Amino acid sequence: MADVAIPQQKRDPHWKHELGKRLAPALQVGLPAIALVVMLAVIFWIRPAAMSYFGFTLLFKLAVPLMFASLAQMLVIMLGDIDLSIGSFVGFVTCVTALYLDTAPALAIAIYIGSVVVYAGVGLIIHIRQLPSIIVTLGMSFIWLGVAIIILPAPGGSAPAWLTGFMGWRPPLVPLPVLLAILAALVGHLIISRSSYGAILRGAGGNTRAIQRAGWSITGIRAAVYAAAGLLGLVAGITLTGLTTSGDPNVAPAYTLLGVGAVILGGGSFTGGVVSPVGTVIGALTLALAGSLLSFLQVPPTWQIGAQGGILFLVLAGRILLSEKKS
Amino acid sequence: MIRLSLKPWTYGFIVALIMWIATIAYSGFASAVPTLSSALAFAAFSVVVGTGQMMVIASGPGNIDLSMPSVLTLAAYMSMSVMSGSNDMILAGLLVALLVGALAGAANFLAITMLRLPPIIATLAWSFVFQSLAFNLGGEATLKPPAGLSTFTLWSVGGFRIMPVAVILLTVVVAIILARSVWGRRLLAVGQSERAARLAGVPVMRVRLIAYVFCGVAAALTGFLLAGFSGGAALNMGDTYLLEAIAVVVLGGTSVAGGQANAIGIWGAALFFNLMATMLNTFQMQAGVRFVLTGALIILIVALVPKPKAA
Image (cartoon, rainbow over all chains, first blue to last red):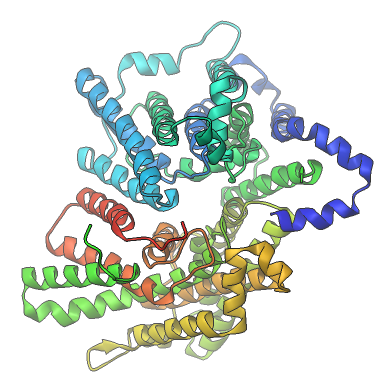
């Protein structure tokens, strides 16, 4: 959207531009974080009892799978692509987990490995044939959904006891969802934002040519990043099964676009190369909490979806109005 | 691969033709005309939605309208409420539907430019809002269309339905607009290079606004007709069109990178989608297998079709 940025900049006083430039990276992550804190404050104000270990666990429980799915989407967006299949992939994983992980763990693990290989293959096809990722992953979304329906026509199966046990585990001091969020954000931050490999991965999306000239194989990078996205999708599906205790092919189609929303809320950009794992995690938590907030505010169910759209607008508008574009 | 000089957009038609023949081979020659006739009728809806989506996608990289299904549903509900089953109000209902579509398109465009949001996010957020509006307006109930509207959507002369013919005319008009009109050339110019178009004096904002409004109107028109065709407005009536609209546009030979559009190819892709559903139904495939084959064919067609030089 460079077209709107240019006239905007001319109007701005110099000092504000400079300040905005310096604060921009912090604001990208900061605004969804502020939104998250404001939402939490409102919820605690209405229902002080929620401000407890148990309250946090309940509020953020369902955010855990969404968070991993969002991180998977973030990796793909980092390359300048988009993954429209992650939602149905997560649904597929819940089916495999609920059907086989308890009774035939070896088979389940073989399917897991196979599906990560398929993800890598998707990345390869997209790269080698120079195909639009949006349409290839759209096709993949039908394939995952179809395979899931073939192995589990109606929602069912059961999660292994250790998995439900893990998702219900209460670690000391920090509630499990918060602990997982902090861990995921930290690991993501260290790998993607801090490490030298992270710089190369982001570079592969932002400036493919430069990375290629530096001697890296973009084909290899794309396959590896897609495989990693598949792996995170697996984690999302397995944790979701631990929460719902059953498999359902249609459990998570919303994760696809909510994940994109979380990445963008967290300061990512579709141009590739610009993503923030910490921002993405906070974005996913914000989106998951928005639903709870609206029921706490007693917004009628029929208006809740609309209000969620409104929240998305508000947070993004805040981010875009405050942080000035760099050029 | 053999060097065929076929244009990418013809692949949809060829695959559709193969599927039609396969269906006939399986269930006898008598099924030929009814199969094609019903595929044309269902494809007509996909084509209207797809044509709208094509305008937006052609207007530049990253432009996409995810709010189409909810605009479709909202317009269907609004127009059905206005008409409340009365034949005299059909024109008013149509106007209301088109107005809803135009406003939705303008709202999408404003969110994209004023808030500087990526189109995918802006239209997604609006789709939540529209969905909520439709939900409040219609609730769980299905609103019945006036008899006259249903008659029109099912009207056929000599075994062939009139509505698909009208949509074919629409496709031809759109193809001419894209190839010959000032706005059409400007749209493609903006899609190819916004900067170059701006420097050449093209009013980029206005051109793109019209593309989004056109898209909203197309979704609304589909909602209006579909409600008449399928016996009323229902909350989930637009759901299948979210992904199908994108798929028919891309399989139809329009580039997701923008700046290049193909209105006629959408028909090939839409026929492919509907004939494949018919074929797999006659083969009595289960739903899961149908999804897998749909996905595999989408990827296969995109992967095999030779691409124009510019990637």
